[in-house]
Length: 124
Image (cartoon, rainbow, N blue to C red; front, side):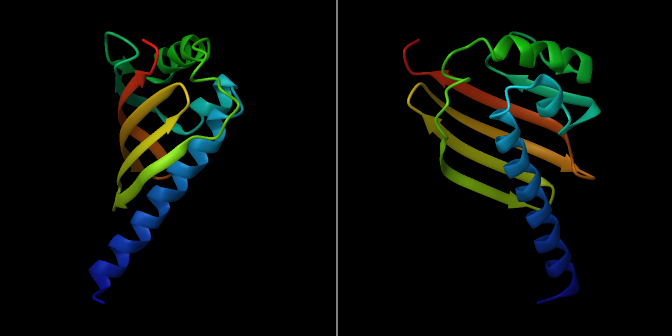
């Protein structure tokens, strides 16, 4: 394995660790704990909100609103169908009984700097 491949593999593992930490934080339902995974200048584009969320303050307000949606706040653990990373880029496919979702991430220095999320509520 080349040194570059070893570095890419290590960065990929770090990206997966942040994604897993973020998934665990969602169970807390605590806006500050969830938002701690994001950089201050994060950008999030999601189907849950009509406009991109730019910056942590806007993101925190959106998280508070999202926590009011019952399938998002479900007690059950999501099932992850795909959890992949290449370097600082991550990809998740998951579902629970009330929703399905795909998320892409750009993670730098242990923080999410960009996320795109397509969340589909099953009863919507």
